[in-house]
Image (cartoon, helix red, strand yellow):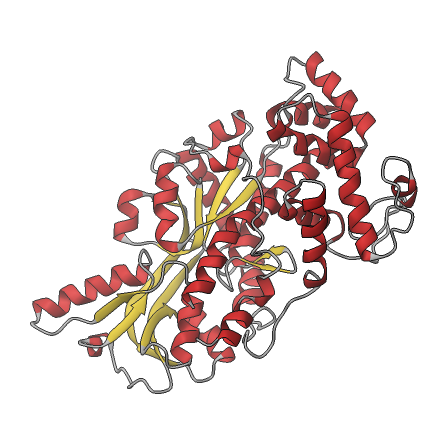
Length: 469
C-alpha cells in the first residue's frame, strides 16, 4: 500500500501509538501469568483479564475510549458482576493480542476470558470451554474483490487462493474443506496466512482494493463492510461453515467463570433488548465504520498527544498513563468544569494550579492545563508517596489526585489498622478506601489503570499492523 493509505489507516489511533516509546510496563497483576477460577479471582482481588483482538468492530479506540461490541458487552458483564458481588471490588481489564495468540494466551494464564466474536469449533472446544452462545446462525462466507471471479459454492474454491488469519475459525474450516476436497481427488484451496497483526476487517479492505483475491468473513461482518467498500463481492452461497455460534471462551478448569458468563450471555443474547441494541450499534448502523482513506477520525486527541508526551517526559511519567488519567477526568473535554471548580482536560482547580506546589496561574489554555495537572501529579508522588515501592507510587498518586492527599494518608492509616499493607494500593489500601470513601476512588484508580493497560497493550499491535499494511 502507498504511504498515504498506511498513514490514514491508523490515523484515528495514532495518538495512542507513538514513535516515542512509553516508559515502564503495565501493572504486574495484568502482565503476569496467573490461573484461577472466578472465586479465586475475587478472593485475590485480581482484575478479570479479557483477551481481545484489536479490530474496527469488536474492540477499538475512538478518541481514547474503548469501543466495539465485545468492549461494550464486557463492560456490561462488569456491571453484572458488581450486582452479584456487591461487597467486592470487581473489575475487568482488556488485554489486546493478535488472533493467533488468543488461545495460547488464555491457556498460559495471560488472560481469563477470550472475547473476540469467537465461533465455537471442535478444535477450540478441545482446549477451552465456551459459555452459552450469545449469537447463533452465523455463516462464514467467501468474499472477493472487484476483479475476483464469482464463486458458486464452497467446492468452487478448489485451486483458488484465499487469505485468512491463522488461528481463526475460518482457517480451521478451510482446512476441513480441503480435507473433503482431497478425498474427492480435487485440488485444495490455496490458503495463505495473513500477517498475524492484521484483522479480518483489514483483509476485507485488501480484497476490496484487489490486493488479495478472496478472504472469508462472518456474514454480518461482510454485510457491514460492504457498505464501506462497495467493490466487495459477497458470495453467501459459498459458505465454508453454516449456523455458527459465537461465545466467550475460558480455560477448562474455570467452571464458575464459565457459569457466570453463561448467566450473563442470557441477558445479551440474540433477541434480547440489550443484545439487539449492542449488535445494531456496531453491525447494522454505520456510525463507527468509515473508509479510513476518505474520512479520518482523529477526534480531540491529535492536538493533545504531543502535550501529554512533552509534560510526561518533563516530569518522568509514562505519557499513555497521563492520557488515561485525562480521559478518566474529562473525556478530553477542555470545556468541562466540575461542581467543585476543577476545569479543563486535567480537571485541576485554578487555586491548586496557582499555589506554590504548581505555580501555573492560567489553566484555561490546553497546554497550561495539561502542564499543571502533570506537575501536580509529580508533586503528589514526591511529597507523599516516596516511601512506597516505585511500582505502586502512581496508584497512590492517582487516588490522591481524585480524593486529595490528606484523605489518602488517612486511608493508609486505616489500612494499617485493618491489618492491610499501607504501602500497597491494590488488594490493600483500596479496601480501606472502599471502607472510608466508597467506590468512587477505588473505581477511579482502577479505571485509569484499565485505560492505560488497553492503550499500552494496543501499542505494539498497531505498530506491527502499520508495518504489515
